[in-house]
Amino acid sequence: MPEVPTASYDEVPYSDYVFPYTHPASVAAVAALFGMRPADPARCRVLELGCWSGANLIPMACDLPGSEFVGIDLSPRQIDHGRRAVAALGLTNIDLRPGSILDVDDRFGRFDYIVCHGVYSWVPAEVREGILAVCKANLAADGVAYVSYNTYRSAAQGSARARPALSWRFWREPSAPATRSTAVCCGGRQICSTRRPTQTFITTTWRR
Image 1 (cartoon, rainbow, N blue to C red):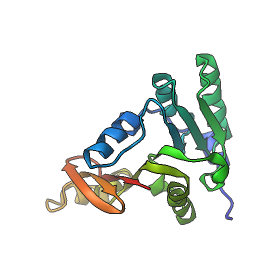
Image 2: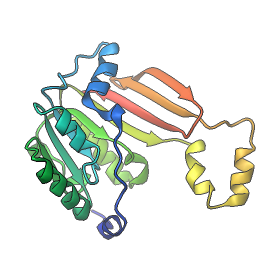
Image 3: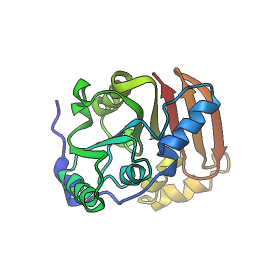
Image 4: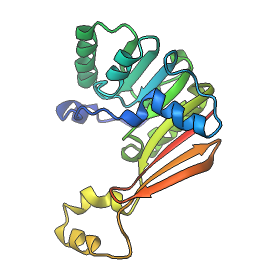
């Protein structure tokens, strides 16, 4: 297994964000609209891959006390920060663990919802394969996985800013407007897609 640079994540912690569309109730609603039978969000197990400090997962644990939440992140520093927040809130239904996504195995058990937001496009191929492997092996029956990933061309917006000349030419290309695409897939088949102006990324939701 290649060496993973954990130090960089500890030195520059990821900012704390909450993504409401990853909430089990939101994912379950979309899944139900397309004929799936997701678990009741009020009584479910949720795994977040790349949870950083748990900023996205902790509010879910507060909102759904009857559910169980597990988060894993490569940065021990961010996990420690999250654990202190969990302790301060007195939460007993959430477990934040330091480690690689590649460490997730059968010992973690099965989950009704697996969330992986803002990770897939930024990790090596081996870890991307690991994310998909976890979704395959650790989803419960009728479980749903939410995985977001960036797509070109407009996802290159951030890197283009570092190259003013390229950025100038890119944003004046009339035939390539920036879009955000959201695709929902069931059993590997795309069942809906939306587009709107902004940065491009795709969210894929599928069932076991």
